[in-house]
Length: 627
Image (cartoon, rainbow, N blue to C red; front, side, top):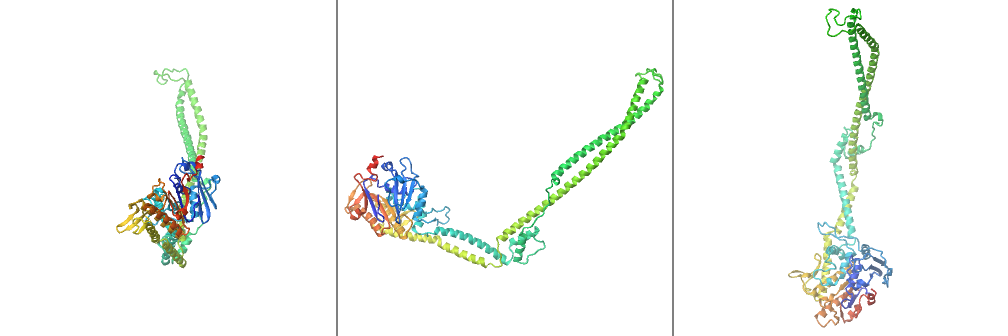
């Protein structure tokens, strides 16, 4: 099918000929996430849907595979630029873009600049950026939308769509400049810069009269950390900064080398434990030998006494003496006394033992003296190790104190460095004053450009122009309430008549003729403003079955004169308005209408591009035979 640019294009035909599918195909090929082409012959017989757009003379071909009867959409999309005409078959269609990528590319082709609008005070959520996805809402009016008294725009009844239309309408109306979003980002950056300069300038002002509290505190801390001599004083602000800068300078640190393992405290502790163990062993050995010596002395004493007592054996002259009676008194003995030979043998053995003990005594004394020498040496070694341990503990404590001092000095020096880096000298603040003045001027300029009240006023002006044209078109169509001022209600997305008794929204008006008429009037008024202001939306309005208020869509009226009754005259006024609208815009607007009525007027016949009757349909009959 071929449609004329900048004109009214009418497709008339019988019911079920595929007229309504035209709008669904355009919507689907624009990147919609769901294919709404009705299930039936079209979904069965067609493999690809394709639309060739004209962009200032450049052909933009968008094709998308038919998802068939079982799926909601296909991800196979084909985009080609600089196309002169539709190809005869889809053999060259190969997926080269995603649905999201297509919407981005269409936004780029439409020259929709980066944008976002959220002028409501205290709005937490971010607004919806205007893109090709929202632009199409203003170009399509499906059969169940054109006569809907509650929904004015395409897909307005779906979740999230009304908010998207409200967010993007200011941009599409031209109430926001094209660089509004860039200015918003510049404004945010300028505010950050201004706050920084104000902070720096406030610091400089404080330092220009006297040292700030933070500088004085840092000065005291630096003296306490021995970074500044304790008797140092600041003469003025500049001198104070010099002292702080000197305190923040890095300085070398000398540390005791503790890398020698022999000096390690743990090794010394182990050495002390070993010496104590050895000393304990020597002491026990000395005690043992001293006990042995005492026992030997006791033995000698006892042995001498025994020897003296046994000397009495000289009284016994014969071994034959009577052993039953006492040799002194001759009394009978209960226990028989030993014989002389036995006593002599015991005495001899005792004498041998005494001789051995006397020989061993000097050697025992010498060994004990040797052990005492070892003990003295171990005592000295233990004292030396204990002294080393005490010295090491003292050294470690000193190092700890030095480390604490170094940590405190590093902390104070770091704070001083941060302070000096974030404050500027006050000897000459003319430069920052100039920067501050420039920053304030930039912020003020951007605030004026981004003033929500200015945008609100621009929106009001744009909607006033739209309302003026709605009123004009409604009066041309002779709609009810057109004798009152009409406006587009942006908050409720409807048309409202401002009557003497108060606002009257479309959903409170009666008659399907009014609903259709106000839908057409509102979209024509919007697109007139879009075209006059050169807004980045498709110069297209596709309407399905606008005569349904007078003739049911399922009833094929065929050709009518447009003058025989009120219904015909109402339909004729509607189409004549569409025709004259395109003529008045000098080829800047294309309107496509699919309907089942056909007026006999010459202008209507000239605008008719397709007649689908007597078996002629959107899908040729031979396509159906091949399915």
